[in-house]
Structures are given as C-alpha cells and as structure tokens.
Image 1 (cartoon, rainbow, N blue to C red):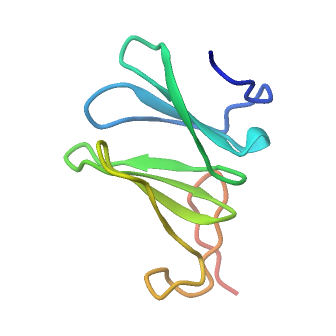
Image 2 (cartoon, helix red, strand yellow):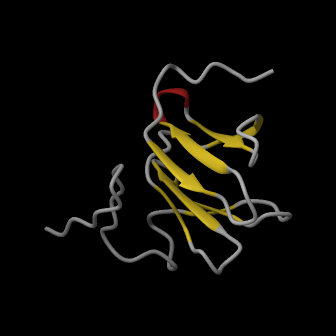
Length: 102
C-alpha cells in the first residue's frame, strides 16, 4: 500500500532502467514508481527536494537536508553529507539544484 505523501511532489525524475521517482519534502520521502506508474516503494530522505539522473549512468541523486542520496539500482543507497570531504564547500540544496555562494 502506498504511504501518504502529504499531498505534494517537489520534483520528478526518470529512473535509469524504467520508472520514475517523486520527491516528497513534506513527507521526508522519495516515492518510487515502476514503468507502469504503479507505486513500487519509498525511501526516507529528510526534506527531499531536487532529483537528477543520467541517461547513461545507473545511479540517480536526490538532495535534501541530509545531503545527497545516491541511489544505484540494485545496490543500497548512500548519503553524501553536505559537510563531507566529497561535497563542495558551502553547498546548500533547494528544489532546483542551484548552488548559492556567499
């Protein structure tokens, strides 16, 4: 059964291999859908915002208050925290993947 997603989808992105994902910042979740548009699961991600995927790469990415969630189909998701050495300095996320500098 599909969980309540608080009535708002922030962003939508095609998933490599078929289907799509919708960010649900009010529900702190990412809603996953198959190529048939049936709900296939969800991932927890605090204040999930912008989504991105490469047409040729396996992972897709979701931003949020916890940093970037990197999701590869068939492997466990990993998080890159905003303050980690892998993240650019002063990186802040919004629902349009804009980088703001001071």
